[in-house]
Length: 560
Ligand code: ADA
Figure: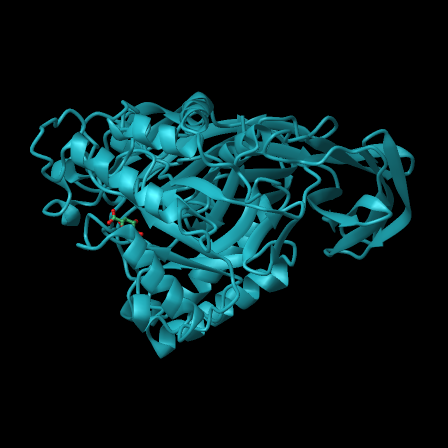
């Protein structure tokens, strides 16, 4: 499944994931060997390929004809797609979806091959040996659709609230014309027992048009953390009186705003009790099945968490669907961790980082759980060149979505040149771990600098990373670092001190679960894992679990 709800009742869509494909490495000692594997999956989970870095080919076949659209939810991290031996498209970026149209495909069985590459290459500027694993494979779902000459490409729903008139929404629907001539049709939008007709829409040959409609609603319920009410919207496209195509999306009526120094959900000042979470698991790599995602969220809820930061890349859309349904807020960010100025100056970086932003917001715009867009975690925000990139990317976000604030997580402290840019200022800090300081002193120093010299006066302030490491099962009363006892002690002090600092709008623990890291990190990462999880990679609870649960459960979701 690609979403937790059905996105079409008229359009013919079927998944090419959830079945076996032929996998064949193209390099290394196993080059040319062929094995049957399930997709989506990471090849690091195929015995013998745990450390394979390079190119491989996936192959399957399908039977379809006419205008056939292939949707790829994630290929890690570069994919070239061939149909019957012809290159139909390619994409760089493991964490965002892309699609391609095979126009007027002949009837019959067709061969589908995907060449996947997870090597580190200069032209893949966002991927490097890092403190997380850059996996290889067709790592997210694949779908095949058969569409007519005109089809609906996307729907964006922007909930709006006005005192007196209540909830309404701006609905945008894009339709694309695949035919050789101008086409016309009519749209009907169904939502909450309401339906609105567009009247005749004309679409020039080879073009797309966006239909916009503002709809007012009576009696819809807010989307909130306590009651995350969701509503489905179906757009139906008819031509000559025949329903040709449809697309279903989902929304929640909520607003996010920055008011004085607080982040507000439906006007109420939020207090974030969050976890940073990698998409990582020993059995699945980054291709977690829905039930594994669901289990993670149930643990986060059990600990009293109300938010997840998708460190450091856009997440699987089904995870966002679950957060919508659970009422768990999401800070979603583009793909970047600790990229130096040198990398940011590469000829590939800006276009690739900005493409992730466009694809992330384009695909995830409707999720009510996403309350903020983030960029460039701990990249070169202390340099003039880096600042130019931050300016461009934050401006790009604002051009694509005015309904949410934007931010970035920094560790550059007093050297940061960019704290005047975001709507929300955010710091990663590790008192009692990397820094021999109290959390109270660190947050006071950083908040004071941000407000005075840093340019972030009057803005909300988040701690986007705070935590400590522990090896699961390493128990000792000597309180040495890497014991579970020390991690629990550090988290207790960090959380108590940060939540006592009322100017701070909340925090994200680094991190929810241990994750596999690149080989280059092995000296600093026992087990070649980042061990700061509150649970280990198998989701086994460390002593800190109960410490976090005790403190989070005493903290309300809002400032009273
Ligand atoms: C940084 C980084 C995280 C992780 C963390 C750590 O803040 O943003 O991805 O590497 O440090 O564990 O040290």
